[in-house]
Image (tube, rainbow, N blue to C red; front, side, top):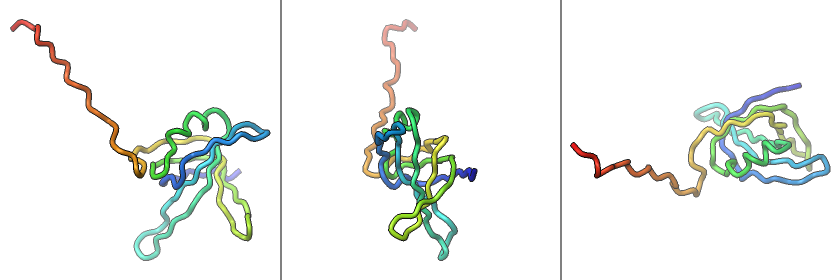
Length: 117
């Protein structure tokens, strides 16, 4: 088994699909490699089987930051090699997905005018 942990940016929103083997949640993560002139990006296709993936899917949005752990493999399609991760764990790392407005509003202060001094 080849376990890997990656951290990067989600490149497409997660999609839940039904298969004969159960439901699978899929998305893609871009990880920067190197720096300066030699900087490049490695793309990983992620698949998370079962209910845990389904429940996290609404939070796996394009532009968000995430750390993913799982089993590394690869697949071939039309002469290209794709790196894949069969996910066992995900950590949402915050950051606002692209195109998402700030929706957080600070709670109003708890002021009680009836307090005697």
